[in-house]
Amino acid sequence: MSLMDQLVQMASGQAAKTADEKTGLSEGLAAQVMPMAMAVLMKGLKGNAASAQGAEALASALDNHDGAVVDDPTALQNDDVLADGQKILGHILGGKQAETERQLAQVAGGIDQSQISSILAMAAPAVLGALGKAKREQGLSASDLAGMLNSEAKEVEGKVPAQLGGVLSMLDADGDGNLNNEAMGLGKRLLGGLFGRK
Image (cartoon, rainbow, N blue to C red; front, top):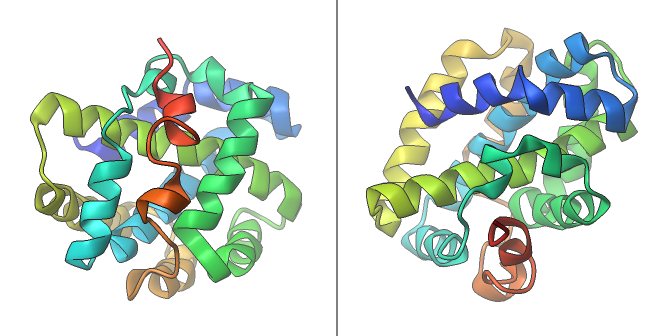
């Protein structure tokens, strides 16, 4: 099972229930939108990790992440997790965040952009947690992570609605985010606070 398949499975289960409670979207709609948000973030990470420097920064930022939120998606409703998720979005999407949210809201049927923002903030810790877990369990190097993101991005393109193509294309070239260790809070401050939990 691919990483994206695992995330979609997670999104259609407890994560959708959590999103329902936190955003006001119905569980069914949340289960449709959450995988799209995860796909967008996977594409954004692919762009950011396209350079050797970006891949190394991502690998370093994932070092202490055990994927606790993947194992327990209910943690995604915690206010501190959502707040950190918003910070992560800025690092992954950079100046493309607002436009990404706008287009995703349209594709999702014109739901409120603030709800999309919350969905993305929940999806970001899940995506990075899954990558961190895979890195640890499979002993992935920076180049391995870049290769995995390339493969996952190709799979994403074949599974998401065609209307999402504009967003994915926007994120596919050079990443506009900042994955350096300082910005990503290297483990202990930002992301480690999320994924270092047991």
